[in-house]
Image (cartoon, rainbow, N blue to C red; front, side, top):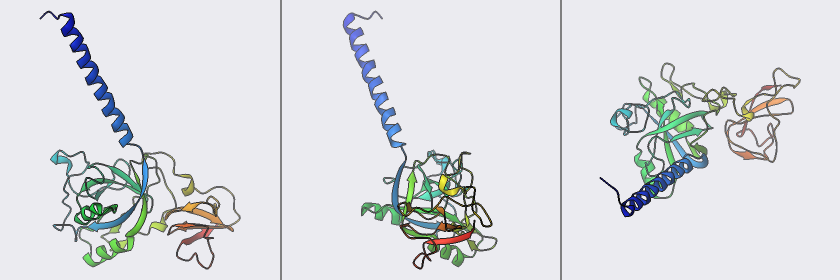
Length: 259
């Protein structure tokens, strides 16, 4: 069909409009993927208290969702994050987060009734998969309670090189719960370097290398590592200007060895 000048002009205008809209979508997508850090109420759930009991999830990959697993699981690396649940209006299905307290990555693959209710009331809440198949149900639930944090930092759309510990959150073979303070740093989730706070530095006169020196002006979160007076410490609670080893630091800093 021959195009008149008028029709040609209209076609060009339409193509420009479509291209502009596409660029807008790309810009929106890029903005949505920017890393942000928020405080969340962080709970855990597992095999015995899932509904129904087991590892079924609301948004399996084989259901056409932008997720990874067909059932709750994962190891905690960037490429194989562990399932978490929340309101899909709070965090979109397939959204990855990194949780410094537990030193691992998670991906949104399930719904959580309590999270839905909390989100409607302005409370950020995510529920992390802990596993527990064939484990003692009471021990699984006790572990969930022990690892629950009322307000903890969570990185949404995180970089791929955060330090990762793939130790199971609950070991069904021994019915033991993960200890966040047992991790002293490790390789990044995507093969990159660990964060500076997780890496010991050379020097020190004790049995091992010293972590980065404690700074009273720095705000620390659970899992951070520091050194003070030739002793290494791991944070087990949030703090600023609480001296490691002091009388009030017993539930904030855990000594992990001399340096």
